[in-house]
Image 1 (spheres, helix red, strand yellow):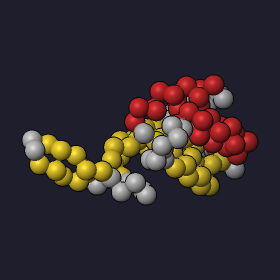
Image 2: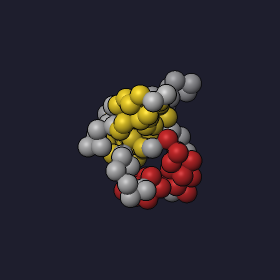
Image 3: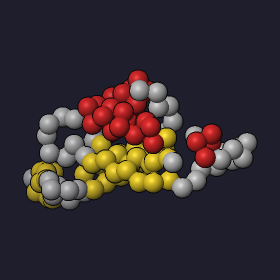
Length: 113
């Protein structure tokens, strides 16, 4: 079995997360720019004397697909690297992946990772 880990993190934490994952043996990842909010509900900013609400804050979504045996190490690495202790540090979601295929070689399963 394989798992997909999706981590929503603050943009300035990307290099720390990338290094932490590399240190536990995870090499590949996909990074997507995203905007969103959770409990923090955005914030108010001042621009040219006018206040406006920024509902959606910039985030990054990091996606990796790994073997089941590496999931706990990956979660711990991401959690430690992305942690600031402030609201909006992010979330980690884990889901099952039934199949993976490497397009170049047609390898399937964990061999395709």
